[in-house]
Length: 380
Image (cartoon, rainbow, N blue to C red; front, side, top):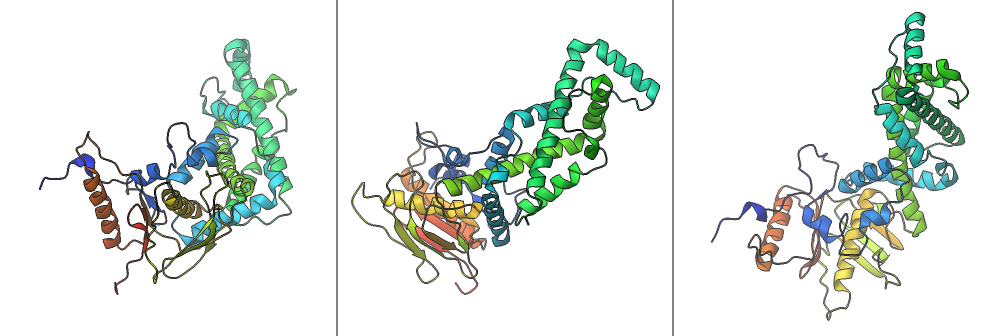
């Protein structure tokens, strides 16, 4: 018997440190197995499939969400409610600020050059004159930054106004409330809808507001746009592919679905799945190329999407949230670390067993042992 090499240890995709107990934990192998962020050569990842965001920041937020799905039923439900609300108000969410505008505002808000700090009139006038004389280097950038920030504020005012008669549900509500409060603050409420035509004095005065007095508020408005953009992308994927929002159930761990398919398979044959504490293991048998692995991946992918709070590719899907999701579909020998296929399987079983000993609810999708939902209780 040889000691296990450090490289063989099954480690989570991200450290447990700083992870919320409300998050579904996925290890690096499961992320690869399901193609969450990296897929086989020439194929799209699940992130690529879901990334209908309009902004780079929205894509970053979506990636963060996909790295850290929820395991808490209230959290998942809050996301589902937000997605439902966005789909009900789909037209309004198409008016969210453009990627070009938010990117320009983000860069401008982070800039530190040429800020006029003087508040007294004489000092302000002298600083503005000095800045204006240096037109080519600093003033032109300030003019553009002020113009795009005014445009962002104008667009967000219209966006909020379009939703005034609605009652946002789920996690979208606090985001919209915070955006509304920021826009209504004393200084930002007086910002004109356009930064053009105000002259040098108004331009520099607005620059002072945006980058000195309300710097954090502007940065937060951009962050809120990104958060909403990511939720809108999840809603759009759900609607575009006719996914169903899962039923979140209570009680012992179980998953029940009808008409389940893999989102990447065209003209797929839909299948059911029913697993609970009385039927904890589903064994799949059949010849090569019969679709067993696709079924496993379809099941695990649907479980993963359900914990994100978005729709899944099925006619119906009900589940009790789990805490750990393991996939062991594509294990291979590793000549670099000296890990054989048999040892790789043993390490996966060990990682699953450790999660169960810790008291976690666990769902696995494995070749040979197939689908196994496990809930540990003192009676087991």
